Length: 163
Image 1: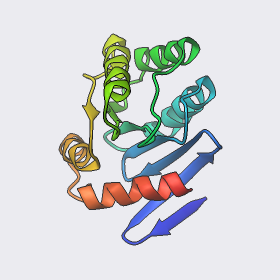
Image 2: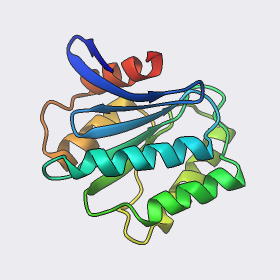
Image 3: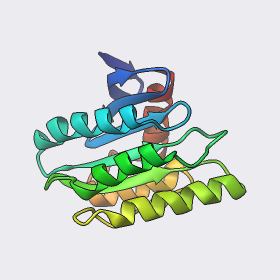
């Protein structure tokens, strides 16, 4: 299913009550609608492997947490995240997490995500961001894509969230 929104074209690969997996340019978006789940991690990993292998020059993976009510993942979900980060494949250019919420719980989630991403033996360095603008700057440089701008990335995330 393809959803077009001026000026971005987002492809929704899977949509559930818990998450949305979508692609925009050479970014795969795992947009959580609530608490992270093992199924969402495993499904997004499977989608990424197939999709990114077809992307010339590789692709990046962006995890987007809800802007409210963010909590650390449970132990089973952490284990699934660790497995995903440990075997990313040669086409993974980078991985990032967008955590827009603030406060003590959000800081705890950031710390957990840093540890999980850092444990991947082959994974690129972890990147934890607070705004779509920060993510866009990182992704545009990483993917050498001037079309990845803060406004367009924010719109792609919005389209995926509403997907």
